[in-house]
Amino acid sequence: MPRTDTPSMSPEAPFAPDAPAKTRRSRNAALVAAAALGLSLAAAPAAAEEAPFQHYVALGDSFTAGPLIPPYAPGSDPRCLRSSANYAQLTADRLGAAAFTDVSCSGAVIADLSEPRFSGVAPQYDALTPDTDLVTVGIGGNDFGFVDVLTTCAKRSLGNPLGNPCERYYGDELDERVEGLRDEVSGVYGEIAARSPDATVLAVGYLQILPERNGCWPREPIARGDVAYLDGVQTALNTMIAEEAAAHGAVFVDVLERGHDICAPGSERWVEGIVPENSAAPVHPNAAGMAAVADRVSDALGAPAA
Image 1 (tube, helix red, strand yellow):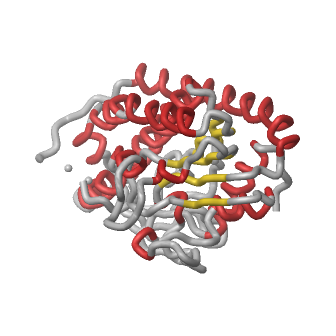
Image 2 (spheres, one colour):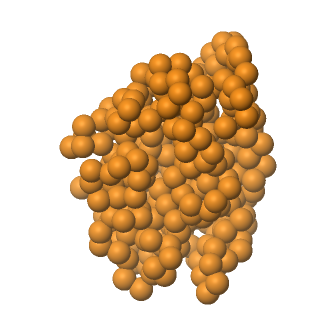
Image 3 (spheres, one colour):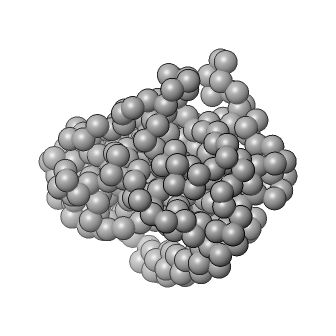
């Protein structure tokens, strides 16, 4: 998979959706969302008492870094396309953290936390110290391969815009990809706990890319019947991240709010479409989306929103 960051299809074969599996997935997502809310509320008083945090470290991929959202973060490696208006910087400003280190990098996969993303760019884990007392992390979307998936689904929509060519092609494969990432995602939170044992750790979910159904083909070329399928897969990814984070004592920050996906009007959109209307990379958060995520992170920490 190309290491670009946004969330790649042989002849189509009939695919019969597994309705019971989707029902279970929806039920599990609802349970995890409720549990995550409880964790956030439970953590808020303690976090508020400790504020300002002494050392906040932000880890993640481009949904954290904020490519093409001005202004760029001064002193950051230009290859990481890191914005100083991303949710991590906004959160650090609101908290008044004594020290803030943002090592998020566009295109990052889980391996880039422990290995250099580019020559001369240190592994992201290197920013963690025993004195780090706050960590936010948003990772896993590139390991799943959402860029390739959406690109392939877009191509297949051209021949069947009202059908579900993407679902027929992938079948259960995408759910299996999500499950296959569990051990790697679990390892992320285990490593953070080992390096910064006293830190409050927040796992930040991914803003929703697609609406629940129908979509807006041809403006955003995902076939009408594939929109719910892909939205369900992204929900499953967020749910899995929430479960693995919670298993290591981290708090999942659910950033899902309907009505702000790539099909929303430009003034209400938090994630840009294939042809952005606001300053942001294609199929990535814009400034409004980053501010919304910062609101949720601040709320999870008991800090005031902007």
